[in-house]
Length: 296
Image (tube, rainbow, N blue to C red; front, side):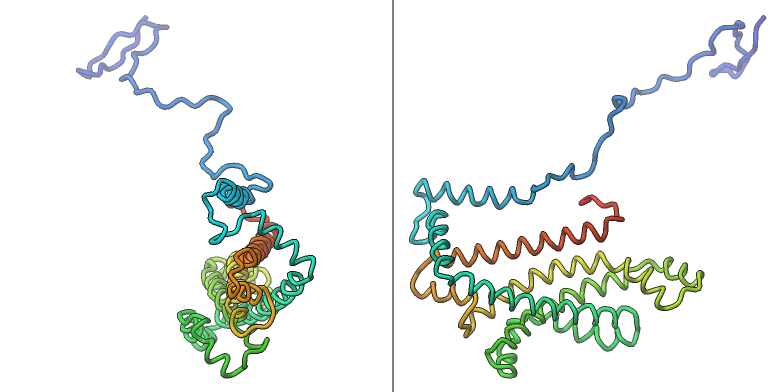
């Protein structure tokens, strides 16, 4: 018994014996084979517990090797052994601790006032059109003016005391916080706003359930930049008519060509900057644990 199938060339019937397989179609090109149970990973890879310390450790190792091999002139840059010995002497005399505490106090106050004012300005401008019209323009102008350019005016207004130093640090931090928090607030998806309106949420509920979670990523980006800005501002103000602090210690060492003391100050700045940034990142990962990102 036979069945009739149309042929590919003539369209006429072709005889197919019962139980036989139908004619095969045109041959297909073989595709890439993937082993069963394996999956191609496109992300940056797994993270190491202390992976961010690899770069600084390699940098110190390179510095140590260059100093030990004689390629590094100690008159230009002291070796790690000399720097460690100088740091030990400074700790023994109490000079390093006193200057570090004063620097931390200045940076902490500037960071606090800068973060607070920057967030408040961003909220006022991001949640109100009138606030945006009043505040965004002047703050964008301040963003284009470096804090160093305002030093003469701030010295004229506030003198050379602690108020001027803290103000310079706070200005740099506030601009970073405002720019990133404001950008995060204004980039919230309008569908969430429509959903909140559809659910008839109050203003307070809208801010708590939509605005705050949506602006947190930008807030933490601004906070990281603000922490860096606080240390940069601290370095500047502590070398202008200062009588204490790490920058003052480094400026005094420059007068006597003590490169080892200068390196101790730079290492202190670097450690504080790295540790504060790592702390902010740890808080960010915990607070934003609900997000699935490449960094996570």
